[in-house]
Length: 130
Image 1: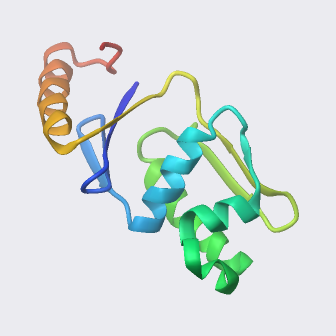
Image 2 (image 1 turned 135 degrees about the vertical axis):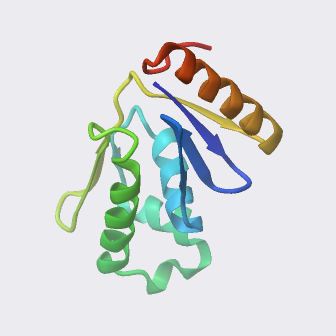
């Protein structure tokens, strides 16, 4: 399955749906895509990546809340996307290999979005092309 990621509007497009993310949700999502092979993220790295200069004021509750909000939105795309945060175990996630992420600028995003919508209507199947 292909998921388009629009960097400018911080949105995801998949299965004909557009999912908008907040700045922190988007930053966390991109960080997880880049760390896909690791399946685990050090909490300190996560805090520095997402909250940058405010890292000293971030608690476990902030991280837990962010994961809850992101998980709620991302599971619309694929219920197999597994994002978990445990205060004792840290950050763990699983992104299936069948998901392909295309991070693109706005022009390419809208071009591909139109093509994918047309292709989806034409075949009435899950997308497997590039």
